[in-house]
Each structure stands twice: as structure tokens, then as C-alpha cells.
Image (cartoon, rainbow, N blue to C red; front, side, top):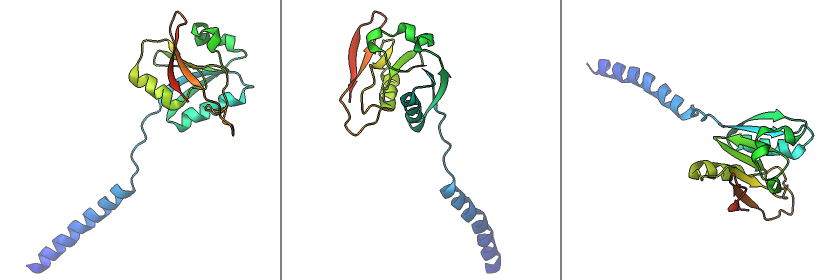
Length: 154
């Protein structure tokens, strides 16, 4: 009788131990990246670095190369004072310039009633514009009338 119990325990262990080991080594499936559509010119290196920043932060960019930023459809809705070297769209918002990925996530979480967010110009230290002496900068929201407010400071 004891031999049957021992054989049963060994058979059970043969099933449980490999399953437990598989659970420890299996990696959870990566969540699907947040889609974002980026418009940039082929000659701008910092735009490519910003796209790399997005990818490293879990976004899934689709990049459209344009000869001039005037050809980027979202650009028509961005006030000229907020222009940078690239623009993007996601979930109904426009993202102009070197906006950090965590600020984009904050935008999507808070969902303010704005057209988008922007980092005007190309401030040193912003994503894609890494530099030894970063400059403080603001991320601004903008609405259809061109009104801006500070959304984040870096």
C-alpha cells in the first residue's frame, strides 16, 4: 500500500515541479504599445531621438516623413508660437515638439479639454535634445483659440 502512495506522490511531483518552474521563468506578455502618429522631416536627428524616447517608454510610433513640416496635417491646428521640429497625434490630441513621454501619459490620464500639448522650440535637456546643461522648460496646453496654459514644468 505504501508503495502505491509513494508512486502516486512521485507522479504528482513530476507534473507539479515542471509547471512551477515554467511559471517562474515565463515572462508576462508585454502590453500593446500606445499608438502615436509622428510627422517629421528626414533631416532632423533630434526628431529620431524623440521617437526612440517614445518607443523606450512603451509607445508605438508610426512615423511619416514629410519634406516640410507645413505638409504635416496636424500642424495647421498648432499656434505658430508653439512650433517645434516635429508634431504628433494620438487619441484626438496633438503633441508638438519634445514633450516627455510621461507628460503625454499624464495628458491621456487627465484628458483636459484642449487640442494638444507642446514644448515650443528645442530646449536642451528635453527628450531628443539631451545635453550636459539642460534648460528648464514648460509643457503647454493649447486650445482652438490659441490660448495656452502650463501643463508641466521640467
